[in-house]
Image 1 (cartoon, rainbow, N blue to C red):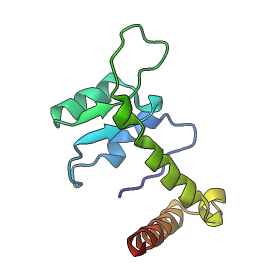
Image 2 (cartoon, one colour):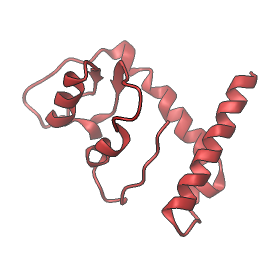
Image 3 (cartoon, rainbow, N blue to C red):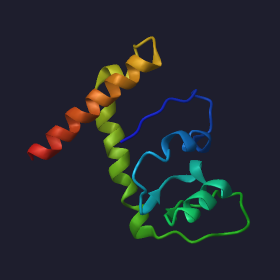
Length: 119
């Protein structure tokens, strides 16, 4: 898992390059919401032979189909964020520095992973 912080007013697709760094294993499928609908993201994922499952923004005239059965799996990611936000320190971001906040996000993620492994 990789986490990065961007300013709150930054669009999702601008932080995409930070998260999809070359030092991670290449995914086979990219599940994302409409915030990541950009031609540059689709082109980068196509170049890496990754299937992009991103619904089109409603304002675009050119339509691209989406595999709905794969897109439903994105619910797992949303539930993971919900579980992360159950840690009050993550939800309210009391930490003054980005480094300490990301450290606590990582600790909470590991805790959730261990809990998942024990079930």
